[in-house]
Length: 108
Image (cartoon, rainbow, N blue to C red; front, side):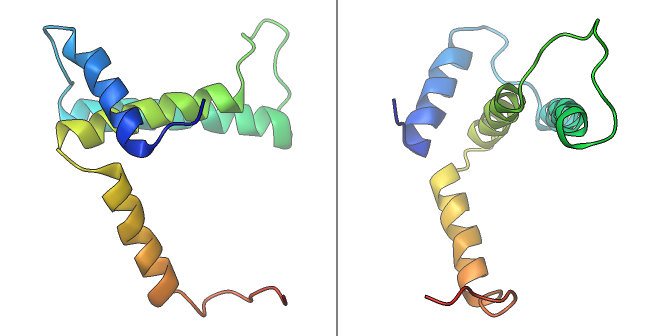
């Protein structure tokens, strides 16, 4: 099922809203995001790097780890009242203007 960024933000907000604790502080969420990035890096290293997974290690996927990062990033954005679609539009505008000639484009 395809979801818009707004739908994702609302789904996460509805989930977090059912708990008295609410969102963690921005600093705590940055720490969680860093933790999740480390877990993703470990999976990438197992898959693409020279460090094979130990037989005793739990099976996780990069898809799962990226999902964890997206969830925490969405929590951070929601807690700071940041619209992820607008954030995306801002960065794409930057790439399409300032960085438009930075890389070699493919011939069409």
